[in-house]
Length: 290
Image (cartoon, rainbow, N blue to C red; front, side, top):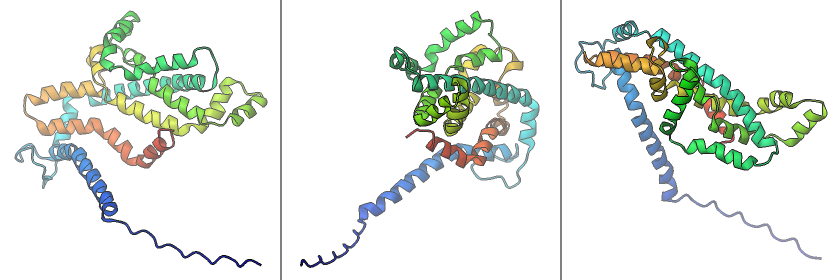
């Protein structure tokens, strides 16, 4: 009768070497340094915005001893910021509403439908991601003018209604949905529209949220294309309104007023990021971007 093998002795855990201890510290120091560089302009903007106009040089990074809202009042009275905010909200909302429809439908077609040349068409569709946006300015301007949309908000929206990035993101998200759910819905009598609405879209909500964040942020800060299309002051978005306001304030060296106006423009995005920071990060982590 064979004897049972003696138990193996537990090996001692390998001690972490000096390199393994230093690497995380260097990484954290690098991230902290990058965060400091990123936050420094925002800190200067806050200091200059709340500094009294007669309280010394505006370039100082020290917080003011007696903060004031005079710069914000002057900036708000010097430009039509409520109208600029309204135009920007309409612009970003109109673009995003159409993009969610077109990106979802195109993403479903490239992910689940079989048709001749699907891979070729998808590759040509992604060529848009490789083009510099300035290359498309003249063709887009000619198209917008031919459609009679020049100097209108729909004219600014139209070139963004088809999005290559959104289509790619939704295609990747739809491909992660199990086929069994689609087959079950088809057996129950669901059509294509109900299948997309009640099966695919609820399961790919993180991808939709992630794309919405990217879309609103990029078009909130868009400057060059609205500058070309919009001529009327009443149709300016925040970026154009801030540019004209800054040019008028620079003549008087009103850096505090300029900083206050810039803070007003960036405040909605900063507030949304601070409030929904965890939701933003989780959306990108769960959206299939790995």
